[in-house]
Length: 112
Image (tube, rainbow, N blue to C red):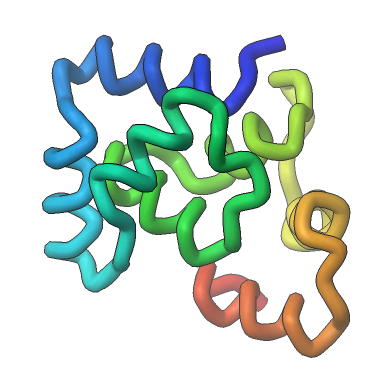
């Protein structure tokens, strides 16, 4: 199973982008993540990322948010179809969120 650090390094290598590129792309889309923060994720030193940072990272790398969340949660890739409910359970598992916080995440992800 690929760790988040391995995933980020692989994708960034495949797309030939640097941490500064991720920061710039995320910033263009209204997110806040620094190149230093991205570098620390790549090194595996930032492990408990917030929902906002994962979204910023996904957008900065131009990858699917659900895919990135699954990697961060340590969930094996499968042919399973993800529903709002199953994604919500994964997010709750990763972040140990309260119901009010889950509503906020759903709003950020623009899901009902």
